[in-house]
Amino acid sequence: MNIGDVSRLSGLPAKTIRYYEDIGLVEPLRSNNGYRAFRESDLHKLAFLGRARSLGFTIDDCRNLLKLYQDRDRASADVRQIALGHLDRIDEKMAELAAMRETLSHLVEACAGDHRPDCPILADLAAEEGETPAETRRTARNAR
Amino acid sequence: MNIGDVSRLSGLPAKTIRYYEDIGLVEPLRSNNGYRAFRESDLHKLAFLGRARSLGFTIDDCRNLLKLYQDRDRASADVRQIALGHLDRIDEKMAELAAMRETLSHLVEACAGDHRPDCPILADLAAEEGETPAETRRTARNAR
DNA sequence: CTTGACCTTCCAGTAAGAGGAATCATTAGG
DNA sequence: CCTAATGATTCCTCTTACTGGAAGGTCAAG
Image (cartoon, rainbow over all chains, first blue to last red; front, side, top):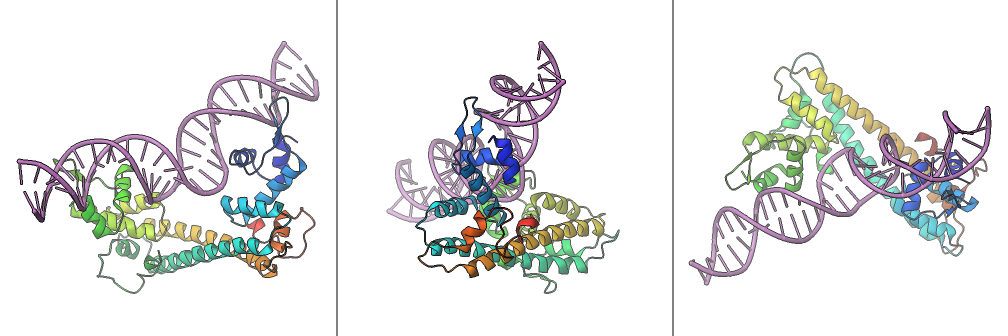
């Protein structure tokens, strides 16, 4: 299979597949003409990678998952550990975003959003430490 | 004020402040010795930037917010527009993360996490299109 | 034989800085 | 006055996970 074929079959852009080869995630053979020659197993790996990435696993996670995937003697605990770590990262990010959302939505609500220059959003961003107006503030801030 | 002073006062790393000068967000003066000489107004800008960044605004948003901040004739609607756009981005990301979390937590629950090699997580990642086992799948996937 | 679809490599750019090296300036202590 | 410790400067590389594009080789169809 050429790169176009695996690209279609795996759903990954050809660019991405070349990149994955670059960083050693797949090692396709080469045809006489210099074209990459992908085996079924390469296609499986790429599909695996695509799915792992779509779940938000980092490339490094993917590398480890792939290793475990190909290790018939793996312990499912190792896989679970990676997934749990990723879940933690997701939860952290969600909390961070939720805090930002909180603060921001309060500010947006408080802003008239008309032709006048008065704007609680700017007021908040410009606020000196200490002269906090209401309790719309100090929410997302302290999270980071 | 030297860079160390504004760094302490604004809470931003000196590296970041230099970077912000690089990309034109602040323009401190220079002392005879070549040191950056920050005015009060520069400090205000930097604090403003720090707060905007902590709310997740992109540098580009920050640039626009700063412009509006310094424009006495601004319309609060313009500020609100930027904030609303950012809120949308936050919501998108949260939805994405929530979908991943969903799928992933199901898989983690289903995994024994012991010494044995059988692992629903790997099984899911390796699954051929079509032979979907349960409805733990196809959740986060189609979101992206 | 040419056209167009594929394929190749290499280079640069993204966001938003972080880390570090080499060098210069300032200041406090002995 | 000399020295050591800070603190400042610039410049370069690295990070994540690709994406875009240029310049050029290959292949099948007409």
